[in-house]
Amino acid sequence: MRERITYLQKLGSSLPPSALTITPTSLTGPSVSAIREERLTFALDELPAELSSILKNDVHELHVRWVNPVAYESVGAMVARVPGGWHLFWTPVLGKESQKEGGRGARLCEVLGGVFGVACGGEESFTKLPSERFYHSAALQYFQPLEGLGRFVEYAKGKLCAEEDGDCVRRVDALAEASALDVSYDSISHALKVTALWAFQEQEIRATARPNVRTEVGVLSDEKTATMEDHELGVSGLLTVLGQDEKPSATVFSFPSRHRDAGSGFEAEFVQVGLHPVLQLKLGSNKPPVEEAACATHAYFTFPRTIFADRYQLSDDLFLASKNLTALRYISQPVDLEAPEYVMKTWGSAALLELKPPAMDDGKAEESWTAEVPLHLRYLTPSHGGYANLEVPYPAVFWACNAEEGTKFPTNPFERVNLGYDGLFGPRTVFWHVEPRPVSGGRVTSSIRVPVLDLDKAGWVNVGTAAVVLLGFAWISWKLLSVYLKTGYGSESRGSRTSETRDDKKRQ
Image 1 (cartoon, rainbow, N blue to C red):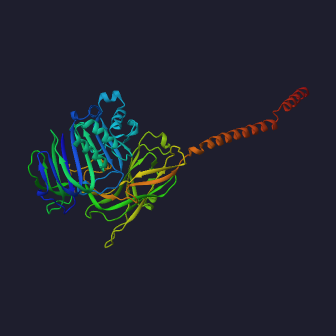
Image 2 (cartoon, rainbow, N blue to C red):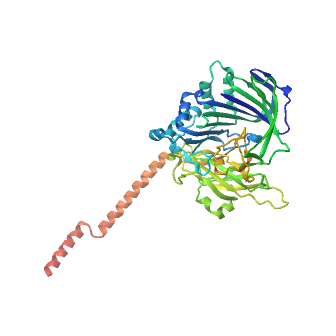
Image 3 (spheres, helix red, strand yellow):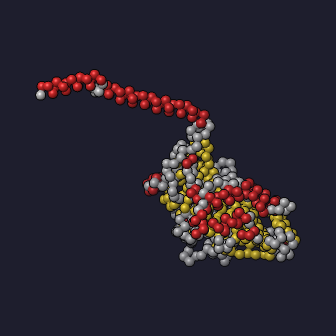
C-alpha cells in the first residue's frame, strides 16, 4: 500500500519548513487554508475478498466518481468536476468465462451496493459510451444521486480498519465530510486507487505513518514561473516521506494539465414547470479563457430517469439558436421517450450540449448571459399528496479549447480522468471549468415540484373510471339494440318478410 497526502494552497500562500514538526511516524503543522487530498493505492491482495474477486474476474477498467451535491471551492490543478452524485464508468472483461456466466453487471452491482449503498441492478441499467471513438473512454456508464458516503465509511471501517486502530477509524470517519471521492482500477496495473478530496477551507496539517505503508506528505501552493508553458500548471512547497526524511524538502515543478479554472461561475434553475420544464443556465461571462485557441462552451448533464432531453427537439437549428444553444453533441442511448419512470431499467441519460454565448466584439466588455435547455418529465410513481419534489444535479459547464499542435498531456500528479465528457473530446482538448454556484442555500442542484397521481384520490379515480366504462358499454349496447329493431330484424319483420316471399313465389 502507498499513501499520498497533499495540502494545496492558493497562489501566494506558503509555509516555512520550520513550521512543520516531523517525527519518524508523524507530521504536524499549523492550520492553513487549503484543499486536502488523500490517495491510497492498494494491491488486489490487500482488498476484501469479494471486492478483489470481482475486480480480477469481471473488470477491465472501473472508475467511481462521487461528488457532494453541496457547493465547494476548488483550487488550481484540482478544479475538474462532474455533476453531483455517484458515477460509475466500467469496461467489462470480454473473456470466455464472463460471457458464459453472464450477469457481470449484476455481480458488480451487488458488490458495489454493499460498498456504497447504491442499487444499479444489472448490466441492463447501464448506458453505453462511445468508447470506440477515443481510447480513454470506458464502455459503460451508470449514475445515481447519492447524498453522502455513510455506507462507504461503515464498509471501510469494518473491512480495512482493525478494532484497536483508532487512527484508521478517525481517518475513515473524516470521509463523511469529503467533497469528492474517486476510485479507479485497471487490469494492467492491478492496483486500486482511492482518492478523497476535502474542499478549500481552514484545516490543520496532520499526517500519521502506518506500518509497511509508504506515506508521502506535500504542503504545496499554486505557482507561476517564467519557464512555464501556456498549457502547464505549477506548484511549489515542501515534500516529506514519513519514516525516511528528517526534514522537508523544498520543491517546485510544473506539469501539463487538461483541466483549468475559467475564473467565472454559473447558476442553474427551472424557469418553466409542468411536464415540459425548462432549465435555465446563467453564466457569468461570455469571454473565452484564451484568445489564441478555438474555444466552445459546453454543458454536460447527467439526468436521472425522471427527466430527459429529446434529441429530436434539439436537432432544430432555429430552435436551438433561440435558446442560445449551438448543438446537441452527444446523448446516451437508448432514451425511451414514452416510458414512465417506474418501468425504466436504465439509470437515465447523459447529454453534452454546446452553448452559444454572445459574441465578444472588439473593445466590448464581457457580459453575463443565459441559455435555456428544454426538458421533459416522465410519468412518476403515484404518491400521497399529488406532488413530488425532484432534484436535478447541476451540469458540468466548461470551455473546451484546442491546444497547440504537438501539445501532449501525460498524466500529472493531480490528473482526474474518465469523467464522462472527457472521452467525448480529442486528447489535445483543454477544459476550462466554470464554477457551479447555488441559486440559494448551498446545494448545486435544481429543484422542481411536479404533479403525480394522488394516491389519496386514486380510489375515486378507479370508481369513476369503472362507472364511465359501464355507462359507455350500456350506451353502445342500447344503440346496437335500437339499430337492430329499427332495421327490420325483429320477430314481426321476419314473419312479414317470409309471407311476402311466399306470395312472390306463387305469382311466378
